[in-house]
Image 1 (tube, rainbow, N blue to C red):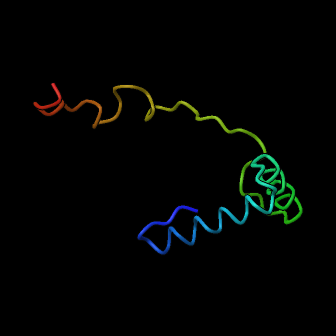
Image 2: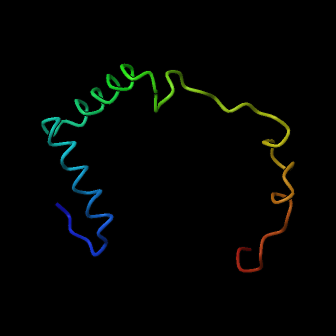
Length: 76
């Protein structure tokens, strides 16, 4: 286990190690268990279907005010 100077990170690393260990060290097995638990609980963390980003006026190039600003001299 990785040890840092941050106790919060240490706790997260330990929890990650435990979860992975409980799945026999197999990440795919762990993720499958997550999906099964999500389905059973009815509270999905990840969407069932992939969503796409719709193109609207604000996402088109040149429409955003920020996009139309000149770059600082250091970036030229």
